Image (cartoon, rainbow, N blue to C red; front, side):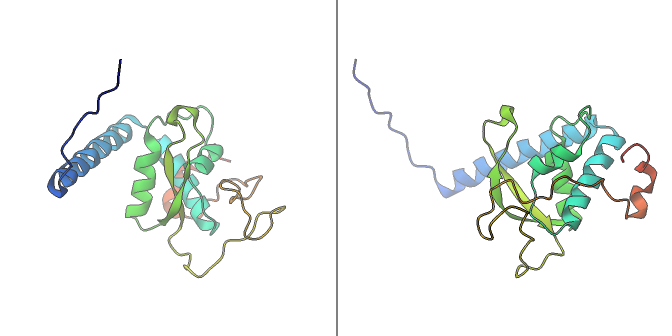
Length: 163
């Protein structure tokens, strides 16, 4: 048997725009479903963890946030919605990408974020034991991590049980 080439027409700009719009709509629907299914408590825990990481001034991703959350949190699919909400509130901004460390994501690329207040000319602190300029992809966050601080009034109601 010989392989035969499958001929396909090139995708036009208009069709590419349609496909991207469809993908974005599916993404948004999935995030909305995850948000609807999550408890206010789980959303608040995510928001607090994202807020704390943003305050460090260091780059972070969902990989780092998962380490801050309790293991029993019911958060399937919630990360995207909470990062999107923090971005919409202008608390964080994207600065790059890295690979997800969750096995079921199959090395998917995820955003790397930094607190929105961090100036583009500012260099994040170099983690202990690293050589400047030679920081591994996921070594940008301090370890061990302290508890998530209770700095905002809107977070005061969730302070019990988080520490």
